[in-house]
Length: 396
Image (cartoon, rainbow, N blue to C red; front, side, top):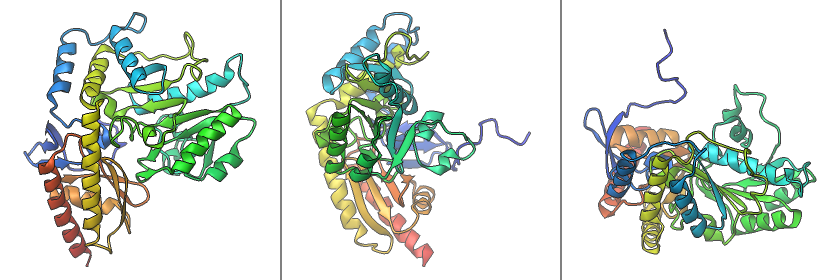
């Protein structure tokens, strides 16, 4: 047998974590890595947050799973809290970001399939370099051919538009358009924030044409930008929003939030999930909100992000041949390089025990746990500086 027991779909590196402590991962040999990847924006409270661990332990000892055929006091409580904190009136819980986006797509189409809607409206306009997940619907929603390879035929019903190009988005709207699906800040696409004009314009187009505006905040949501959700930076509310990653702090959890109007087609039997909304996930989600959904915590994230960005902008001036710019919001920052970023992020990982994440558009994602403090930021810059110097020296 030549295939590995774990299906070989990931390019797994030599780092093999077995334990986590606050902002560090420890591998089998005891080597410590500073984790400024956070599981790609998942471990927003780090790896040993007492509140999150305690909530999971208590719930695991009480009730882990129950069918959605029964009432859900835990799900009702978390949904009510999210509704109180956002634009939404109702929430569906799943297990991942891809599931959250799938539900958002279904909700948008069901809105138009409703007796009061126009059933010919089935197309979703999405945007270049987006990442919405790895299911058939979510890869079809992206224009990235690397995710399409081997899985043809793709699902119909998606049209691609250049990200942050309002004029093109307006030109693509037609009689079959059901809505827009967009990341307010692209993650995989290179930590690219949308412009105010673009998101405000999409909201206006949706209102003018009776369309659904869907925000994918799987990566940029849950306090990472210094707001509980990134749409708050723009003052633009969606009709539907997909959330995951940080919402469970490391426990699998996703959510689709919607207004009452947007969810009019999502009645009994229209959607479901065996594990979605299980009591254990709800306990994790509630613990995360306990930690992050307050003004003091969000202000700290904003302040940390401003300091980190200022230091990064000063740092890249020392290496004009390597780095182009810093972009992003809060503690969702991207370091755009003047060459492919993958070799550099691998160099940091393999030679300096610093974990970051590569992204599109020659960008290194810098996503520290939101609980990182001055000691961790000082360690980060020590490792980043040493890494840039040794990388440049090796290339000379």
